[in-house]
Every structure is written in structure tokens, then in C-alpha cells.
Image (spheres, rainbow over the protein chains, first blue to last red):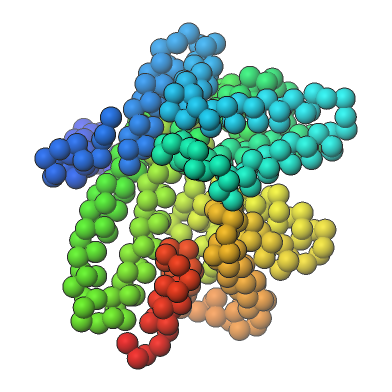
Length: 45
Length: 377
């Protein structure tokens, strides 16, 4: 995806956009895994 | 999900250790880490895997013909595969240990692949440790893909730190988690399930259709998500293993679907079942049916998977017969509307096949098919 972005944008903007994209994804994964239920729903050590 | 998180944490630790260790110890660190993981969380599986690894390698060192050694190794792998697939001894296993025999399916097929390649004399010079490294590779041990020995060995010897490969791996792991956690666990299991419950009370047909649609989608999303995590973790360790999916639901026919669905298994079956049977008997249709039956039984040794395999086998056979006709040749040159139509038909064929394996029992299968194919509902 990063390589694809670099084809259309400058390196600086590709870096910013890809970082933003990853942060959104990580936030939603953590949200649905942990935050939404108020506990570590799927992580049972 | 717990197992996936456990796998992720263990692999993350192994990734760190494997890159920090001195160069010549990097690969052994991965194998030892995998052995420790199995010995701690699934000791019985660890014993089975260790013994079968030693035996399937050892038979080729015996003073017997390679043909007999390969046959012995294949029989051995098939024995424990069938033993677990039939379900004998399952009661004695713990809940986590019960999951690892699922990995045995991949493991057994890797060992059979090794035995057959040894028989063909196509493998490069290697040691017992190379074989151990190939089989004790944590990212692919539980959920595949069934990667091959020769590319794995090439990867192991050429392995160098590559930041691009590492970031590609991280990205794949993230996408895998997005598929499992957001798309499957929330969008399909919660949102779509709510909609199906609401619709189901007003229209039985639409409710049933959407239920079948959701578990077909769920199977793909979950499996491809797990594969993404496995491929991503392997990339982070510096290994590029085989891909398992290539947008299977965009396949315009059932033959193409199987070229895009569980690629590592279908390519294995193509190499070791379809090609030998069709070249030996000169009957490709027989090769197709046999291959699909094996794929069905590989998932589970039961009547429903046998019927599921036969259903797909007949589907592919019919497509091959149709593909030879003049009508097929005329239609392939037509517009993209026909292509979209064929994608929808293929998807629905697969959807119907999933009724066979996802419903609880035969009565439910018949009931669901009756609702889907009659207009009374």
C-alpha cells in the first residue's frame, strides 16, 4: 500500500497518509478487541 | 482468538530473538522457540510431531530403495493424520491441545510433500536440521499455509534483515487482525446477525439466504485473516511463504475459484493427486473428482465433507465439459456483464456447498436447502 501511495504522492505525504491509515486501523482493532467491552475480551492469559 | 493472540505474542518474541541472535543461530532459534511453544502448550502434539519428523527423515537413511522409504514415510504421515481426523483419542486432549491436531493436517501434508520430493530426487542437499527448521516453523504450524521445502530452504539460506519485508509483514498482520476483529467479529457476527434476526421473522427465505451468505463470508474472512497473520509473521521472520487466498469470490467459474481458494492446499493436491491420476489414467475428470474428494476428507473424515468434496468435484468436472463446447468459446468473448453474472453464479454455487458443512446436522441441511430452492417460503 505504501509503494502504491508513493506512486501518486510525494514521499512525505505518503508517509503521513500511511501512518494515519495504520493508526486508524490499530485504533479500531483495539477498540473492538478491548475497549468496546471495557475489558480484554479476547485476551485471556 | 485466544490461540491467535498466543501465537502472535510467541511469534513476536521469536521474531525479536531470531534477529538479535548471532547469524548462525538465527534459524535454530526459531525451531527451538517453536518446539518450546509446542512442548509447553501442547505436549502431546509436540511428541507426535517430533517422532514423525524423526521417522519421516530417518526412513530415507535406511538401506532400502527410495521408493519404499517414501512409501513408509507417506504411510506413517497418513496413519496419524487419519487417526486424529477420525477423532480417536480426542477426548484425552486438553482444549488447546485439541487445536494443534488441526495443525497436524498441515504438518502431515508437508511431510508427505517431502517424502514425494525425495522420491523424485528433486530436493537439494540438506541436513536433518534443515528438515526440522522446515517443520518446526511457528507462524505456519497451526493455520498453514502448506509451504514447500525447497523455497523454504532457499529462503533460510538467503535470509537477511530487510526492513521492507519486515514492514510488509507488520502490515499483513494488521490486515489479518482487521479481517478477524472488525469485519468478522463485529460487522458479520454482530451487525449482520442483528439484521438477519430482524428479517428472519418477516421473511423466512430472505432470512435463511442471509444466514447462509453470512457464514460463507465468515468462513472466508476468518480463514484469510488467519492466513494473513501467518504470512505476515513469517515475513517478519524473513521468510516469504506461499499465499493462501487470491480474492476467491471474484472467480468467474468454480475451477478458477479453486485456483484462488486455499491455494497452498489446492496446489499440493494438484501436484500429488490430480497430475499423477490424470496422467496415469488419461482421464482428467477422474483426477478432478479424486482431488476434490481428498480436499474434502483433508478437512474432516466424515460423510458431509465427502459429499462436499464430491459436489465441488462434479462442479469442476461439469465446468470442464462445458468449457470445451462452442457455446463456452462464444460466450467468453462477450461483455463484462456476462463475467459479473458468472461471478455471481460461482459465488452462489460455493454458498450452497457451505450449507453441507456449516449446518449442524443432515436434517438442518435438507431444511435449509428446501427453503432456499422452493418458492413456498
